[in-house]
Structures are given as C-alpha cells and as structure tokens.
Image 1 (tube, one colour):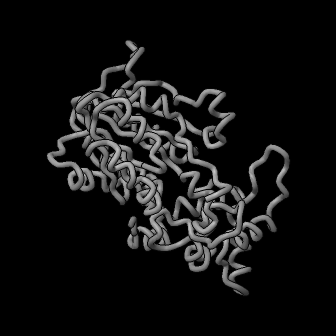
Image 2: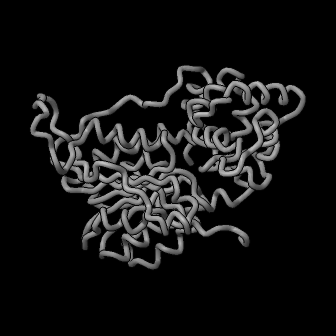
Image 3: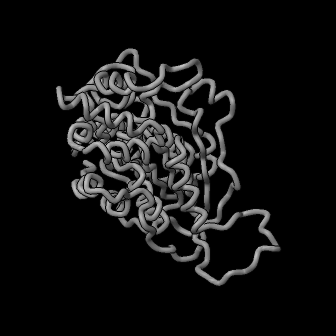
Length: 340
C-alpha cells in the first residue's frame, strides 16, 4: 500500500510504562490497530495478551504475530464492549486482567485507504464502518431526516453549522444519491466559509460525527470502561488514550465517578458515606505527548492519556450511556448494531 502512512501508536512508552507488564501477567490491548501496544507489552515481559479489533483488516495484519510469541499472544475480532466473552473464549482459565490499554479513534491505516471512506483527503465510497458490516455513512446520510442529521453533526462533531450542513445534504439528495466522500465534502464546503491558514478543513467535524455515529464509538467506550472495571484485578492498570473532547470527557467522568486521587488528598474535604472507589486515579491531569512526538506524528497532537489503578473495592455498577439521542434514527441504529 504505497503512499500510506504507517500507523504509530501514540504515547506508546507512557502507556507501557504505566501498565508495567510483569512476567506471568495477563493484559488486554482493546484496540489492536497495527499492534504497537501489543508488541511492546509482549516484548517487555513474559506475559499473556489478548488484542481485540473490530476491523477484519486489522485482524489479518495481526495474524502473523500469533506465531511470534510462543502462544502468549491472542487475537480476537469483535467490539471491545464484548471483552468479557472474548477473553473467556480465547484465554483458557481466564480469571482477571493485570492491565488494559485503549487507543481510541480511527487507525491511520484506515484513514489512508480511500476505499474505507473515513477521510475526504481522497475520494472513495462513503462507508466509515470499522467492522465492514451494518449501516454505512452513506446509508445514514441518505436515510436520516434533516433534524436528526443536524443532531448527529452537533452531538458527535460539535459542529456549530450542523443545521446548515444537514439542510444542504437533504437538498442535494433529493436530486442525486450521495455515495462518496468527495460528494459529501463538496456539499459541506459549499455552505461553509473557506478554510483559513491554521484552521481545520470545514468538513472535518461532520466526517468525525458520522464516523462516531456509524460505529457507535461513544456508547462502545462507555460499555468498554464498565466491562474493564469488572475484569481488572486489584492493582490492575487502566490506560486510555483519547483524541477528541467527547472521548476524553467520557473517560474523565467515568474515572471521577469511580475514583479517588492517588496523591494530595484534601484534608478539608468532608467524608461522605458511599461505595468505596473502584479506581485510584494516578494523574490529576491528562498526560500529553512530548513535543518531539507531536512534531513527528500529527495524530499525537490532540492525544490525552489518563491512567488509573483498580482498587479492591467491588465495581460500582452500570452507568447510563452518556450519548444516546432520543430520536428514532439513533434508536434504530443501536438496535441494528453490528460489530463484526
């Protein structure tokens, strides 16, 4: 695949240092991608690791690794919200995790393949399905009513011009099918101010919103965090790298609802009766990539890493999904969920 950018795992050293892989430990790479985290964890210690990815192309890329690590590496196709069943199916005698890493967002390899439809940098089919199954972005664009389209662009892309863009899409689709990334980008560009130096492309937020909606990324993240809370052993480490504010907000709120800070507790804070915290938050602020990494890898510029250690308290239970719009389009989309 000439001309493509090799996917680089962001904050790789920081994530692996936080996990601290130990001989005999059991670890999860919830988002395999091109295997950067998996390789580094397995090379650090004689441990066992399961990597999950819903993209069949990523599973195919990872298959050669199965023979490299003497039975310590396992690979599963599916959604990380299903990690409990996948771990039990792939790891004999599985009884808990010592660490889990999440690298959220889209893989650079996916962005570089026009046929996957994730990017408008090159024209391709308007697809965006990580699992290559279920409703595509073209289906959403062609079948969702104007109000719900605007809601998707606003809630999942924080696009201020969401109504204007939705209106333009609905006007065009009355005349012709919208089936390519180039078509959609042109529609968005036609109703947005021209890009100024230093600004992102006017289509960026809308494409992000569609990708998140098509793949249910925020609901998946919520479910995955709740699952890993139940699976981590006491002392197990959770490391999550996010790339936009919606993801980071979910991670931050999840840990705040279940955690306590590892250092500098306030002696003035009143003691409130309630469940014991299930996580110890290991850094008060998100960890950012160093300048060299940001300069070498554009994907790192928006990355944030949050780390927490599992306590011996029981899980605090299921939380409501924070991003569930109360419209029929979203409900129907959830009911037809397919993760490969």
